[in-house]
Amino acid sequence: MTQVVPDTHTNPNGDVADTPVRVVPHIINGHPLVEGERRGEVFNPATGAVTASLPFATTATVNAAVSAAQAVAPAWRATGLARRAAVMFKLHEIITSRKDELAALITEEQGKVLSDAAGEIARGLENVEFCAGLVHHMKGEFLEQAAAGLDVHQVRQPLGVVACITPFNFPAMVPLWMITTAIAAGNTVVLKPSEKDPSAVNWIVEAFHEAGLPEGVLNLIHGDREAVEALIDDPRVQAVSFVGSTPIAQSIYTRATALGKRVQALGGAKNHMVVMPDADLDAAADAAVSAGYGAAGERCMAISVVVPVGDIADDLIAKISSRITDLTIGEGTDPDSEMGPVITSAAKERIEGLIAGSSDSGAEVVVDGRSVDLPDEGFFIGPTLIDHVKPGMPVYDEEIFGPVLSVARVGHFDEAVELINSCQYANGTAIFTRDGRTAREFEFAIEVGMVGINVPIPVPIGAFSFGGWKKSLFGDTHMYGPESFNFYTRRKVVTSRWPQPDESRINLGFPTN
Image (cartoon, rainbow, N blue to C red):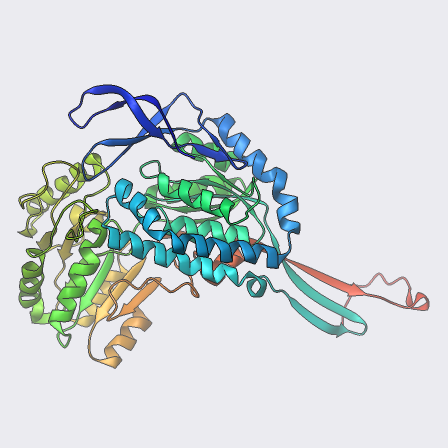
């Protein structure tokens, strides 16, 4: 459904060119739509070149998308659950058979290496598989003879039209976390992906329609803040799901809940990995490098702070440093590349500024990713390691969202727990140890939503749910899995009685058993 039309854009050298580029359209009621005076440019972060043009939705476009979703909501709600499940099974088949095609789109616009893009798709498919079991997940409850001749049953019903707003770092996985559950539960959806890498989402919407999803059930709009605010403010939208930075998550949560909407807004993270003196330091170093620099650190579950306990810090830092120098940095399509670029030039500049300012704060830059050999084009930063990082330093307090691994040394286990529990973010954390009692104490005491024991990126499998605590989550419902079905449905309790005609009488007292 993408189109090629003449569109003015900026070349990597800064010149303005008027050459044909691909336009990524909105998809409303099953049909592509290219409208809106404002346009955004989509870049290949590995080259800096413009790869597509993106129309930004106006309020009228948002209204059209919501109207399309609202018009078909009664029919989709009335669709049999087996029919909905069949769509999920077919979607899984389509994505699985063409995953290389989808991975290539992700790599072109997001920058992550192809193997990482394939992993993202696999994790997204977990939720499609979970949603294929919607007949089980949508079951209610029944209580016979709650009182004499009186039965009570509870059913799950969809909310209606819901909005899903997804981030740039996982352009396929997070949409598959949201929209599959919302649709399986009987809702209709307006989806607004990141404007930085929209093509994967267009591909997924087309795949949904190919799988048999009726037109209008899933509508796609592109844009920026104007589109998001119009979507939130529309009174027909009953709920909002969001993943992004903490300031935006908090803003969306505040705005939408003030309008009486149900909201789950996942924000930023600062994930700590505690390494105990008894840990296998080689395994811990491998895990820190893998979890810290995978996807150029642009994961909300990336390890960003290593917390060595006791006198192992120097040895651990040496092991991490030696591994960093062996990493291959390059374009994601190169099979030899292990780490690609960050998403934009602005992100690159911001990350480089935090690295530069860390020394002024008293930290020590052990490995400086700004000075390593990198490709001449694109938005590349080399893996960076910073020691002696403490709370109060910008490099510690801010979510860097780049290939920067900080080391915060502590003297003992309790100090590590206190450091993590005092952090405003509480998305994920991990501990590396060989001692079961220490692991259990960590699991019990830590105030974080997702915990790994010798697992550096503890993203739950699809049968569980994903979500942090504190400023990593606004709302009380986690994403995908069982909690997501709770979010996208509301319960209705029906109390019924079928008395004989001669049983009827007036009783002004409050009913009891």
